[in-house]
Length: 423
Image (tube, rainbow, N blue to C red; front, side, top):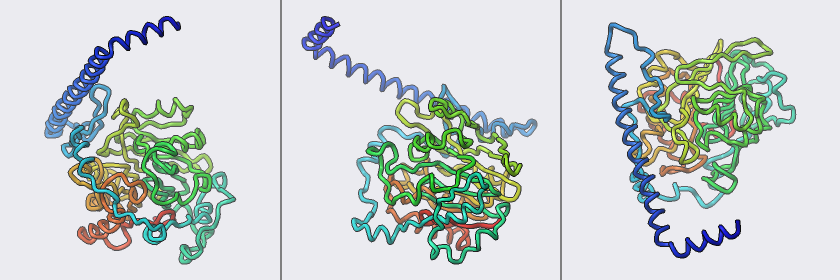
């Protein structure tokens, strides 16, 4: 073995130029292959979109299954919408070269405390609306000043009460009809590892173990800021995970098998073992992409979720650009009691518009899905775009006024504050 190693080392020393040529050739070959493959998939995508439109124009037959259904070409999911455009490497380089810096973030932490306050969730309320098996007895009561006008938790009926507690990015703890829901969980300080990825602007309002135990977890896609592997390990098979098509194997490799994998428009029923209440979990279309490294791009789908109970419903949008599917969601499943919609990571628009809505688009979706109330998430947590860190709530207020949405129906919540709605 040592002799073979010495021979190989000697060859490298005498053939450095050849090795360099081989490496450059290999990189060029791989690059050409991926560019060709991307072009082939893009061309095939356009052909299939055109074919679907032709089928929908055929009034002699029903082709409902083709309307905004997911699309997979050569093992990769693609967006079946005319509103989508694939980004090239040159688009990414152009964005990096023209990026603004700072996002207006203050250097004074006191200023950040004032502009982005962190509130303690109303644990007493969350526990009161949870099944006894899910209660965390050690949870605090929350800030009495923040919740002074809230009713006594013991007087509320879980069957007609909806709560939403935003914990940063797209992570929300939601309760409806007595069901505890956790969305796109991430509790890390950084998105990827403790030392890698964008850092939180504000600390997480509480830890996972402080909350009542969730019954189900909704994962819209596999990006690091929407799927925290530490949370997956912590919750394991104690909850039911709802994930988009192609993501089940990722969980299985980590020993998690209590997973429901859904395609767009596919439904799954969840029954509360204690109360016998039934809930429909519906996967809905979105315009985005997936991947946790350069080798698994779009190998799994991206989705929104609609959870419907007997008295209320919650729509978790996940990341998306604006597309015509939202009117279809509203027509088929509306009205919605509460919609959780992203309102951040949207500048510059030329680069972000296909994958991230802005507040104006979010208000349009609020109306498309016929939401009675909405909260704006995916802002002020990890800065991964160019808008000012306080622009999302300001732009949301402007958009609500533009489209005639009344004050209080669509809000950008405070970190950690538990919001209360009645169905």
